[in-house]
Image 1 (cartoon, rainbow, N blue to C red):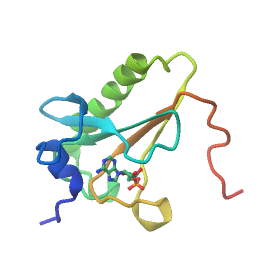
Image 2 (cartoon, protein in one colour):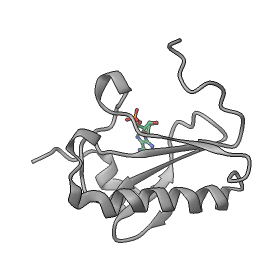
Image 3 (spheres, rainbow, N blue to C red):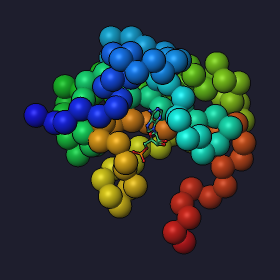
Image 4 (cartoon, rainbow, N blue to C red):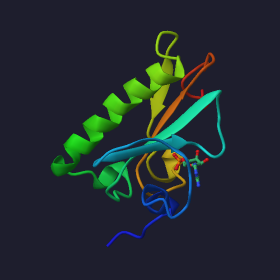
Length: 117
Ligand code: AMP
């Protein structure tokens, strides 16, 4: 059984983080340490530790994460200029919270995709 992270407490609102969106499959809220003018996290309500743990039965929730990203980008007024969706996996990916999440970042030019080269 995977260990819960702070994100499960946010989903259940045991930590009163303002939610931008929530339904039966996914939850979205602002990143506590924004890396761009807009930085939102979209997460499945089900605890899935990493992308490596995703199963076919999770496809509905994963697809919903994208449609919610699209909606929130429009709500934020950043859809036309564009934005970036990021999912980090394990240590090389820079994952810090082991409950999968999609970063929606934008609101300004984001530069090159990676900084390693
Ligand atoms: P990652 O490195 O992809 O695992 O990203 C984890 C993200 O979660 C980071 O951008 C953190 O700033 C963010 N984060 C951690 N704790 C919280 C929290 N309580 N509320 C909102 N965002 C958080």
